[in-house]
Length: 367
Ligand SMILES: Cc1cc2nc3c(=O)[nH]c(=O)nc-3n(C[C@H](O)[C@H](O)[C@H](O)COP(=O)(O)O)c2cc1C
Image (cartoon, helix red, strand yellow):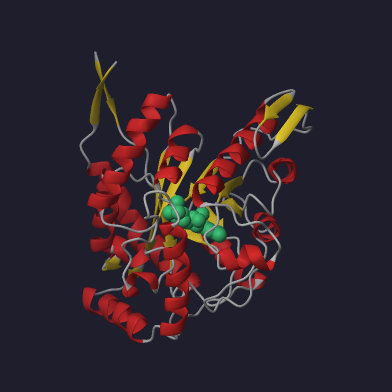
C-alpha cells in the first residue's frame, strides 16, 4: 500500500550577533548589537516568532571589522538561561577545542537546559587567526580529517558506555563520560562546502550547513551529498544560509540591498575575500565555499544575498519553498536590524511558508 508522506516543516535559525559589526561588511546603519542584553531580548523574540534555532559563531580574531567576538559556548549558555524552547547551535573549532573538553561542556549544558544545545563543527578558514593563538595551521583536507575525528569522538563519548578511539589526532581509552547527554542527543552540524566537507557530511554529520546559493546550485550539492550518504548508510539534513530583507514592497527591499552594497567597506571585503579564497584554493579541487563569490556576494560573509530572500513576504516565502524543494531542511538567516526584522519575519513570512507547505502535494512512498 502506498503511504502519503508530508516532508517536515522547514526549520528556521538565525545568526546570533555575538560578534560586533553586524552581518554585512558595510557602513549602512545596522540596528543590532553584539552585547548580551540585546541578544537576550533577541532570543526571546525569536522563539516567540517561530524560530527553532540560533547559531553562535566562533572567532578568535577578525580581519574584517568584527572587532569584538564573544565566545559562543559561554554566550549561548546565557541565551539558554533566558529562553524556553529555542535551541542554541554552538560553533566549535577543532584545534583550540579538544573533543574531551567539548563533549563534557556540551553534556553538562544539555543536562541543565533540557537538551537544547547543538554544535556546529567548523574547520577553519582564517590562517592569521590560528597563528595569532599559536595553533598549527593544517592543510585544508587535514583540517577536515581532524574535524571528522572530532565528530566521531563527540558521538562516541556521548553514546558509548566505555569509549575507545585510536585516531591520528585524538585518542581515548575506555573513557566513560558521566553524566551523558539526555535525549534528544545534541545534534551535530558542520559548515563548509568543499569536497572534503561534503564527504564528511555524508559520513558523520547530522546537518550540512552551506553558504547561500540559488535553488539550482543547492540541489547539485544536495544530490551529491545525499547520494554519498545513502551509500554510507548515513542520513544528513541540509541548512542553507540567507540574508533576509523582507519589506512591504520589492522596490523597498531592493533599495536596501543597493544601499548595503553602495556602502560596502572595500578594504574589509577584499581582506575577507583574500583569506577565504586562499583557504578554498588550498583544497585539492582548488575551490571551497567562496570560489565563485563576487565582491557583492562577499559583503555578506556567507554569500547570503545569493539565496535571494530579498523582496516581499510572499516572494520570500515562495523562494524558501523553492529551496526546500531543492533539498533544504533549514534556513539560517541574517538580518540588518535583528530584533525588528526577526519579529517581522516571524509575523509576515513564516505563516506564509506554513501555508504554502500545507498546500504542497504530498509525496507518495511505497510502504
Ligand atoms: C553556516 C556556516 C557557519 C560557519 N561558522 C563558522 C564559524 O563560526 N567560525 C569559523 O571559523 N568558520 C565558520 N564557518 C566556515 C567553515 O567552517 C569552513 O571553514 C568554510 O566554510 C570553508 O570550508 P570549505 O573549504 O569546506 O569550503 C561557517 C560556515 C558556514 C557555511
